[in-house]
Length: 411
Image (cartoon, rainbow, N blue to C red; front, top):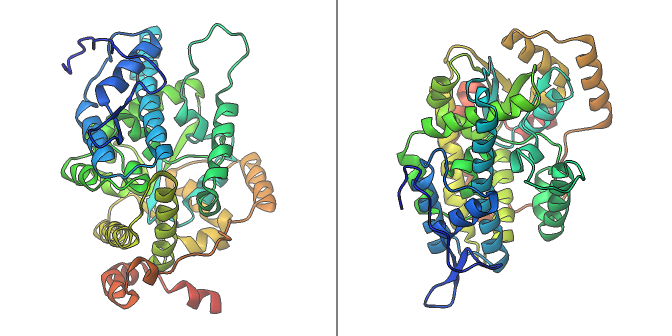
């Protein structure tokens, strides 16, 4: 198969399981070429503008077939997810053909919020979204950046469709919904943008994909962030005149790519005691994996997630003196959210208007930082020893003064 824009032949088999094939053992497997052909046929197109997604797509498909231990639901979900991303790429192509100026649209001084996961970034991102002057990537926009081709004059149903899909998933995986807020109109992480070119850590959170994650770690993120900017230009075209607030803990792994792609980017690092971070992330990954996999290895999750969190912590320490970074603690964001907002606006050279302040204050009066209510598995349940981990996180804790949260609560 060529990666230079040569049309792909239409598959001979067309049906509901077009992109799933059986291996000799009778297991269902995904086929990259068939998924691509389905997307092209769905959009009535013969080629993609850019085929650089081919290698990461094949890496992902290979890992999904050989390592993920997908359940029947997991296999269908993965097929749907990959096909959706491919279709969205084609819709971006079509939009750029209609409006070539999209490709040169400026994205000025975007603010990237990153740091340890489970550190209040969703709460902060949602609070920032209350200011009408701010733009955030919404869940429904990242799942469907453009509506489907249709002659039916019933309007744009993307948000309603995503709300229905999330409602069904919450019924299938209530533990995930309890650990992480899911709303069609809620702010979403940038890992769902880079997932469109299959260069995203989001996949490894959802499935067991060691070979794919190893491939990610061997490659830089510049291509993924070039696409990130391309995607953001399309969203900006649809809601112009606002400043972008973007968030994901995965940005920590790609700070050089962020800076290369967005030279005027403003950075905000969130910090938290790493032990509740680790416990929360472990339980979230377990819940995600269980909703898509036939088998979940808790000790494997423990090893990989603890190594990833330690890697993020070490990278934050290495960048502690990076110029132009605002450091905020989880405790300060939760305890004094409007003070954190004022610091972010001041850091970004932004004007916090009376209307923005009032809208945020009203939202805070209605909403509180959510806490999961399900029973959580502790570190030992994932084969981890807290005493051994303490030494790994000591440089981070000392650098950023992250006192244990139980001590803060006692105080």
